[in-house]
Length: 227
Image 1 (cartoon, rainbow, N blue to C red):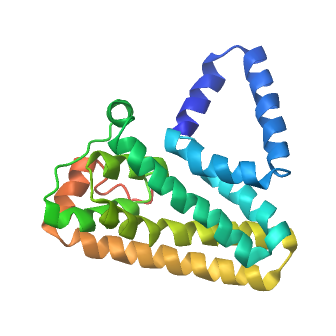
Image 2 (tube, rainbow, N blue to C red):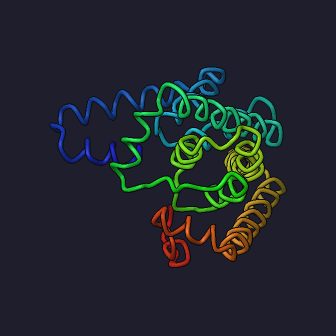
């Protein structure tokens, strides 16, 4: 969603505005590497407002690897994603509820009505559907008002390990650590295969298949459309 807004700005704004914006963002991005605490805060806060998380995660993996080592650095970066998931939940069920509803409807996403007993399975279904950016996943589950415990169980067991693997890969490449690169790639492959398997298992439930159809992604994931 954030990428869509950036693309629209690039197409419609005057060239001078775009060039100044690019210079500003580039300058800020370069300075973030010198301010690891600020980088952490931005990772926690900005993705709650539809700013893409992945570039921050890659940068954090590199920055924290230099200071704390690849493993601990990746864990710190992943913890910021975990906190963002919490922040996004409370913002969506609270002050940003109306705004988030409008944003999701504008981009064609619908929040299905799910029985309380199926909310945990639905939470996992949303988390393992790769066509959804992280912020959209957070918005959907927040609007549905999934209980916090179920929300965190489905969120932290799927998204935080993925964030750790991505950050570990970035840090290992920067440090030139072959062993950590191999570990990160192995973890990523394990997670991707495991989450795809989990999605197929969930889709065997008729209620989850109906939810998939209501979300508008039924069949899209199987066709291999990237996130």
